[in-house]
Length: 169
Image 1 (spheres, rainbow, N blue to C red):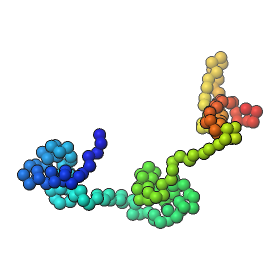
Image 2: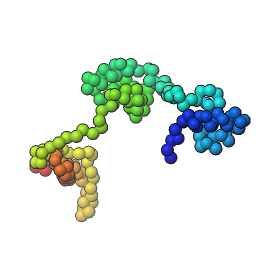
Image 3: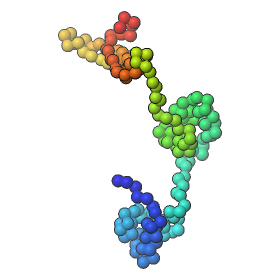
Image 4: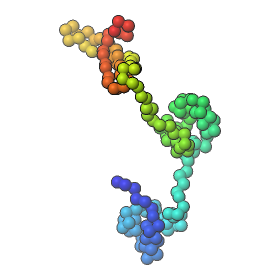
């Protein structure tokens, strides 16, 4: 459901109905808004002309944001800075969200476009944890290491389960 926009017409309609002596609940139900919004208009706090300001959480005042921005400019990852300076105050998703709300100009693209010519590059490595598999003939549990490679241009994947990470595999 889309969020309704608080327009001047809506503000005037709430004021008109309040002047008629209608109740908060009745106005909110008729206009499809919250009773809190109607209450704010009644008390003179809600106005579409002035933007709403969100208050920062208390933990934000306990951090040295200038130092965090400086460390970020030195190339430290944001998660490292959270672990060092704010892990005891809040969770990482909350820190991340508040940081980019406070400093939107520091947001970087989430995807780095890399272009390769065909046949120029391949990326490969062993990936993740080992997998266990059972040999049905004797019931022995074996470990399998997953080798992954990707062709740079076509992004074709190759995966292979190997018994160890030695070069012969």
